[in-house]
Length: 113
Image (cartoon, rainbow, N blue to C red; front, side, top):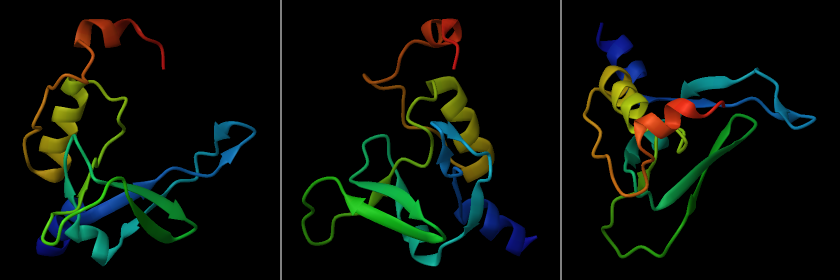
């Protein structure tokens, strides 16, 4: 039970490599121990990407000593209602939004992704 909780709260997922402009569907899921030190925010200061099985974090702005590393754990296109549900059920904490960047759920419901 403890191992399952560690994996659930600390795993990362990477989309498959695009082929002809479409995701291949062969995603990657795993534990990157140093990535577990990066916390969630709607206003991240790092961007996460993967090169093969290597997790890479790039600073989006200058940081002062002692600043916390913050990443957006979820797809930035998710509406607040879906993001909130995922953060609660997968990561075990409440979403900090909605904020000024969130489109209204009614508008998002009309979009075809």
